[in-house]
Image 1 (cartoon, rainbow, N blue to C red):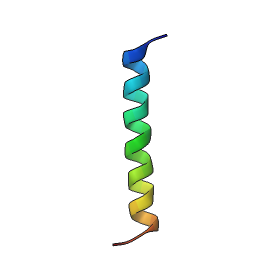
Image 2 (cartoon, one colour):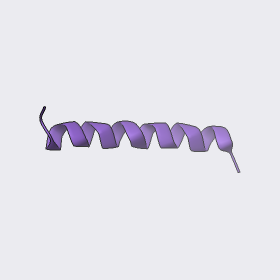
Image 3 (spheres, rainbow, N blue to C red):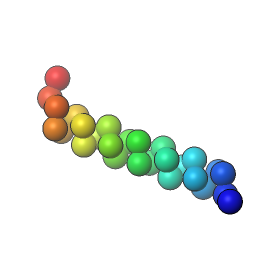
Image 4 (cartoon, helix red, strand yellow):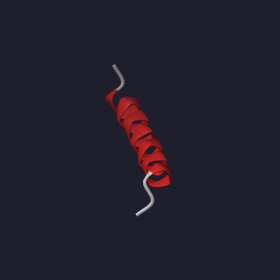
Length: 27
């Protein structure tokens, strides 16, 4: 198991989710 790669993937997914949330919920 590559913990480093998994961490990077999780960070990228989080960023994409946050961006999608921003587009869906304009504050």
